Length: 273
Image 1 (cartoon, rainbow, N blue to C red):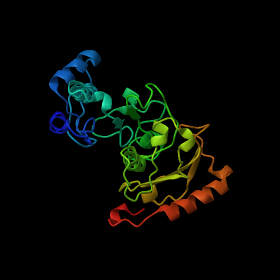
Image 2: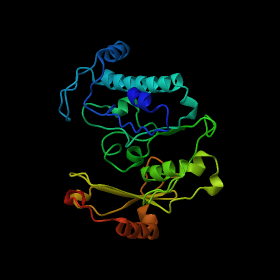
Image 3: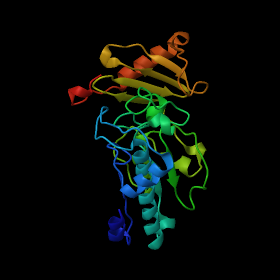
């Protein structure tokens, strides 16, 4: 990253960094692992029974990965400041999914999901809020007031239209919607999705979910033959604890129809649900 900035600092550039941490396997610089072993004390080793490599200090190592990640971002910011381009740089920080539960990670121990459940079945690889609602932080000096928040509902397909909008070029065909008006605090000009739809074709489980306004419909265990949709009112039940599908058959029917019309046939048959 530092080299890339060096090579492109005299012209506009776009840097897309998909770091592999804190993804498993649990691996981090020894100095950071020791730092957290001293904080957490002794712990049971991870022997590799949930995939990936064994790890002597899984909690300490996972925390070390986060701190190493933070350190790397700090070095990037420091470089931007050194080159005098920090104030003219737009930084997006986000994640592709919620907390994991394999490879020795222990998301509940860290409370990684915050308000949402993060154990197996509720975080990564699943379409509950703990699996798909992720952090999104945007830094843009002079454009975005520090500390502001937004409840605008968007997803990753909206990133490309937003970036295209920022630099005033035509976006390639997409079902995304630019959220630049939200970034600029021009809510009256912000277009909204009618609904958002997800498919996750996990080979053992298989999930589908749809979000429209405050309503969330989700079908789990599709690979096991389940077709029943659960329905949640996220305004009053953000943790998805109370299935109200039986009370709102009209919404469930509409969501089934939208799922059907939103599905496209994937080239890889393993992705078919």
